[in-house]
Length: 215
Image (cartoon, rainbow, N blue to C red):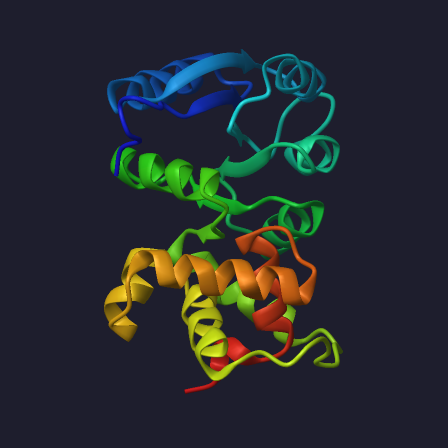
């Protein structure tokens, strides 16, 4: 999936392996993204992000200085972060997610999968490599969180449940026979009711309250 040509997504890359970093940059540029900065360590990644304000930071987990999770903690309030790491270890994944990463992709992902993940991350979606999604869901199910907040309508609940399963607005629209605009309206209404600010937070709410497991 490529970003629209008239509004290319702006990306910063942070990875301490220059050959890998350059290869990722070539792949993204070839798919229409604009790489506005690069960094080989965590401190520089934070500085570059604050200077350029990209749509997405694609960040390795293991870097000199600040690691990917620490970088995420410093920039995630203003910039969406996609971790791109060779590690699929549970503690590493959960540390990044708890720090605020919107997604976590393994470096074994294809160029097309990376491009789609960057696009979806920029759109506020939670994106994980398929082999990691179950780990993240399982962790949040173990949290002792009581369902709370305003009552959602039946349709809002249906939309939220599908969003939590990783479906895009278009896929939700097709599943429920609605327009994409109607789906987005339901998502926005749900965000407002729950006083949340992104689809990533919506996914976490759905997981914590068990909505993602209901039929």
